[in-house]
Amino acid sequence: MEKYDVKFKKKLGQNFLKNTSVVDRIVNQADIDSNSLVIEVGPGGAIMTRELAKKAKNVLAYEIDNDLADEIHKRLEGYDNVVVLFQDFLLSDISKDIAKFDYDKLFFISNVPYYITTPILMKLINSGLSFNKIVMMVQKEVGDRFSTKCGSRDYGSITVLLNYFYDVRREFVVSRNNFVPVPNVDSVVVTFTEKNNKKTVKNFSYFDKLVRDSFKYKRKTIKNNLKNYDLNIVSQVLSKYGYDLSVRAEMLDVDVFVDLANALGK
Image (cartoon, rainbow, N blue to C red; front, side, top):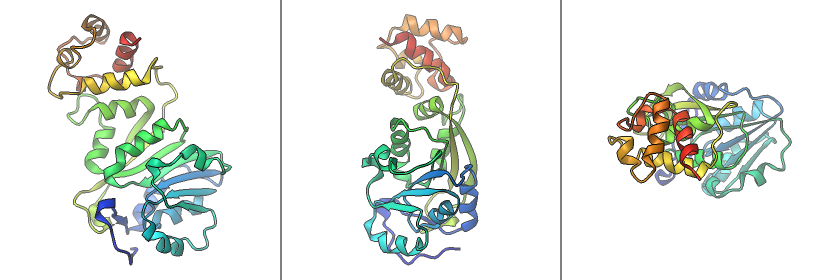
């Protein structure tokens, strides 16, 4: 078990892993080799950064808390294949930052701060970068929402958007007792692997808006949530899948939303 001599900042969502066996399980979720570049956000006490550095060619870590600089540098002494940028990942130009590295495979592996989980994922999607795999440890409730299937009460717009780009898999639960300080909830490790056979969306911004509108009022039907769209076209698309306008968004998988967006969009 790792021990840390730092002042934790609640406002930054700092909960550091202390169990090295959990770290090993997380790192082993990806096929990292000596030609890989791994991006990590929130290295904290660098417990996972060290293990990533043992397998990857390079690790690029983003840490927003400058007060951790001495601790991180001390813990990474001797690991010359790690670059730590003390800056806000959400404001960073990832493509520019990784341009200096030579690699064959690109991974994102991180115990991300709970409060910026979804913004981080959306930034990775919008970056246009191709990741061999994304491995994230997130709040259990959030991870369940990411990885659930249509028909579940946890199924929502973020589930659809993520499942458009990735095969999302819930790997294993991590007890809150593996962190210091101990958070109020358990975590779960979720993996995201890019889909090679996803349907083409003509206009992603329109698709994004349509999906969000479809889930605007969770218990209302598609007819109610999409009343400002052409319901004749919506009905025609739904009928191909055996549904009508009385269906709720939570029952529709990502392919239905792609067809709806392509049929309705300009």
